[in-house]
Image 1 (cartoon, helix red, strand yellow):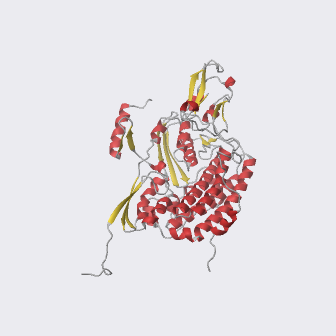
Image 2 (cartoon, helix red, strand yellow):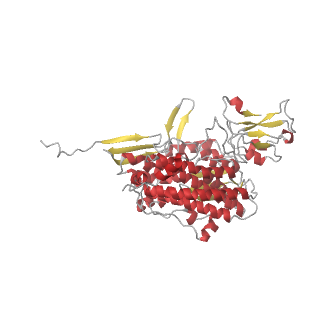
Image 3 (cartoon, chains in turn yellow, cyan):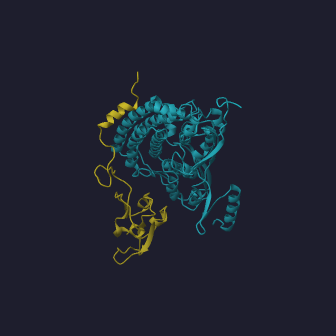
Amino acid sequence: MARLGKIQPELMKNVRSKQATVRYPFVKAGINVPEGLRARWDYKMPERCTGCKICERVCPAEAIEMIKCRPEDFQTKTGFRPICHLDRCVICGQCVESCPRGVLTLTDSFEMAFLSRDDMIVY
Amino acid sequence: MTSAGKRIVIPPRVTIPIGPQHPALKEPGMFKLTVEGEHIVDAVVNIGYNHRSIEKIGENNTHLQNLYLASRICGICSATHNGNYAQAVEFAAEAEIPERAKFIRTLIWELDRIHSHILWLGVAFHEVGFDTAFMLSWRDREIVMDMLENISGNRIHHDMSTIGGVRRNISDVQKEQMLRGFDKLEERMAFYRDVAIHEKTFWNRVDGVGMLEAPIAKKTSAVGPTGRGSGLKVDVRFNDPTQAYIPMMDTGDFEMILSDRGDVAGRAVVRVIETIEAINMSRWLLNNMPDGPIRERVRPRIQPNEVLARHEAPRGELIHYLVTNGTNKPDRWKVRAPTYNNWTSMAHCLRGDYLADAPIILAAIDPCYSCTDRVVIVDGNDETMRLVSLDNLRIESNKWHKEHPRRE
């Protein structure tokens, strides 16, 4: 007599079960965003930055560039501030770890698709 | 004149190129299969389409930067490269890392193995046309992916290891979540073990296919599940344990998973049962994790030394050879990924089998091309591309090093 295989009972169970995936771009509820997710780079506390360039030196992807402080920026001690090129950033978080004053952070905003490279520079 | 019934027809030998897009894993590798009818009589394996010169880039980076570069050698086993490089630098610096860091590093390695083996199982189901099990197994792989994302902050590039320890701690809440996840995962893996062994849709396609006998596996130096599926006792975790594998192996609760079948089915069984064993290992690591610091400060300048770090990656033995020179950059860094070892056995596995079985045989070593590939030179100015032989490469590299002497 033909017997059911191993997979058929599982299939029957799955007919009535909930959908395993989320229709992501249309529905955002149900996405698992854990605490401490490493995503978009952020210059969180400019007033604590001294412009020491450690973040630029440790960056493995050369994504962080030190530029001269613009007039609208907070003026650091050395006159330089970091910017991040998201197109090169590998989101390793080494800059956050190496910063002696806790200036930088990786936020949990993970939507990082842009139409041009200029939009990918985080000031 | 002979009748049509008695005439012996010898099918012509035809060489079929498969690739450079791999039929199994969508990665660049080229196979020239010579077939007589449906039987494969000869196979030539050609790789080298995706050279990224990671070792050379690494020589110009600091050790800290190389950790992240090593992690990006391979997407699936990123934790193994990252952890093994950190381990190599610690060996070179002769630094001892805290016990808790060792346990967390080993835990990440084992979680990496679980997700890599479930990924392979899904691909194997897909290759034999059993897509239902492929979808289901990848759905359950999300359990371990979520665990990894939860503790490291990233699904794929965990980057947990750093020189002198690990970067993040595991809280008690995360521990409880993971223990609950392991219970569910173990139940599901027991189900997939039964599916792989008892479901004829899968078993009849892999039983006796791609035979690799133990002497030939030994001769071609097969490693990892490919070797263990042929009965070779090759597992660095047991033969040469490092990190938290040492106390783990001292308990004697764990054993090396071996199969003497030697075919694709043997390799599949080894991988599935090894996943269950890895879940048990992870549970042991979580339950016996000591308290304490997770990181020891290691000076960035590493003393001159020459070390070889070994680790059992999901695909087999991974070797990082590192020469340090007293600066914060390596003098020489050499990575030998496990797929490179398993290549040579591939041609033997393919011979004598049917052409239709080629994808599953190729997938059975769980190939990872990007870790393996060697050299092609692309000139951006005149848009030419050429393959370079080892001898020419050596001459060119000698020339380059003569023109660019290393700064002392």
